[in-house]
Length: 184
Image (cartoon, rainbow, N blue to C red):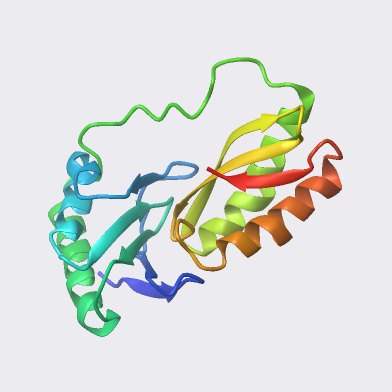
């Protein structure tokens, strides 16, 4: 098994590409702590390394954010844990979590347009950097879109710039009702 690595805009995060499906198209899992990782054998194994601070599974990649240490010492241990997991054929997730991402209600035309832009233009670009972005709401009164950053995007030094100059400008261009974008 050959696992490629890629750097991300977040210097504390590396993206690992095992050359096979991880979560599958459109699915993600974000583990911000050792406690959150209990439902995933691979995330638990990665959190056994004391320097690991966050684990994120995307469609075909795994992003690992370090809390401390040097990549040259941490990277081989992460590669070993990923390789062992896949060669043993262990499940990625044992107990699915309740995501709670949708409110179950009907979207207004503006919200549907915002969600469509995020799904087709923003999420694919953010996934290339080892992260994910999720729509959390739109305040029609103020025109503010609320987004949740996950994976390498959470805590990335350039995430504020991406939100303000990238996503906000794009949404304001296509959806005049949008006045700002905020991370939640």
